[in-house]
Length: 242
Image 1 (cartoon, rainbow, N blue to C red):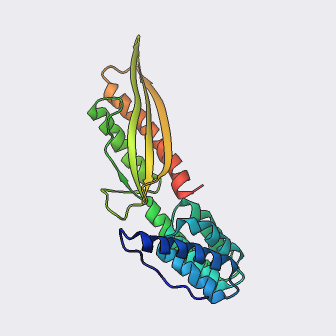
Image 2: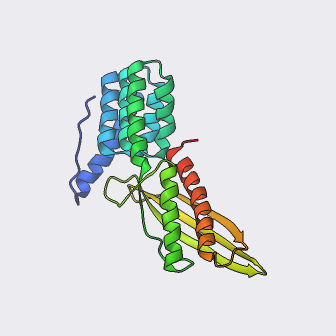
């Protein structure tokens, strides 16, 4: 059984259907073909197609296929396809596979995958609660906290792993006697390279002071705490660091 790469022309339904059918044939070959060369070639085709629907089959091949060459091809394909759902399989193979070539391939794929996931663009805070300066303070706090939690915040472009869309959900200031209290709540939606929602996280914080004229500093303190909580959650969900 031989597999050939089919490149579908934009706007061509026939070629698009042919490419989809090829993905399914490649998944079947990876799972069932008796030839290790065919199975390895199937993994290569799936990587070329960026076939996310093949991730379960590729993970299984990486953990169960008896041929090291197929496991190497599966690891490479998972690294090319990317996404949070491939990290655990690559990490396990990089540490535990009995073949050194497979461990090396999985480690390279894992590094490539996490390096892409770490690169994020942070959009301006649109609408929501608070005035523009307050929303700007949350944006600044989030930029700092994302960097502290392993993300590289860039201006944008095609190479970002995720686009982050922050919102301020609550900004409340209450004066009670000598005490000034601030409560904030914010959220971030992470959009992956295919335009899908990868995560929605929320974080909130309270801060209070008796210092006169400290409202701005108090808002900054609360937003920093909320941004820290959100960044920790994003690192767990998108980078699987824990």
